[in-house]
Length: 286
Picture: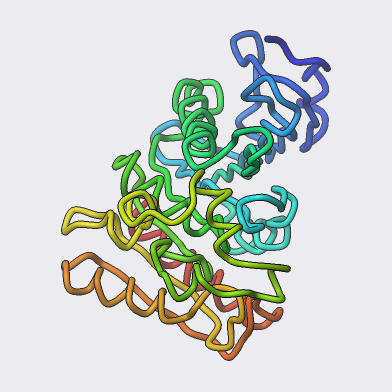
């Protein structure tokens, strides 16, 4: 594939929008703060990501943050993370940021957990393959919010041990939580079991649901993890994050847990504090 628009003007402007990728013929100025938008990593229009590249980056010292949006696995988009990205860049201008879309869970399209994991892995593989072109290192941490928090954790814990650290922002960690599965949530607009079934790809099955639960896929070798949750969250039970933090501690995995007086979101002041704590945590491991 080739870029559908030329990147020659990237040397004159700090931001450049693109619609497809192949970096073999593209020269990037590593002295400039550059944003490449809607880089394609698959055949579908939804399979795109934005790449935020800091100025004066280099292949040995520029770490990467991968961001995975929420939306109950079946909704949401990468732009939902824009406010957090702006905060991160303000507080850590030397980090590269990947903000990705992924195929959304759909019974009709037969898209479930495995397909979403394939998308995340495709983006990571593309970045690593092209690290010389982008002039960024392989040191990568992952951040997810809500369903994206679960995706970030399970991807790192189960599928990619090279991820250095993880941030879970009010995401579920125990998918095989029967009381949660067997409940109706007005905020989600229906029976939670239906939503989880569409994500997992089948109705309740203890083994299948444990297989995609971060809680059941950690060990003493798991990556450092920081967790944020609101104690009034009406969508994802806050006890899941508490139990997750407790299990990580019991396994001697480096972990932090921060709880706020909040629902399934944080206000501006809380968000600022979350990003301060997140950046400090990630700087230790990236």
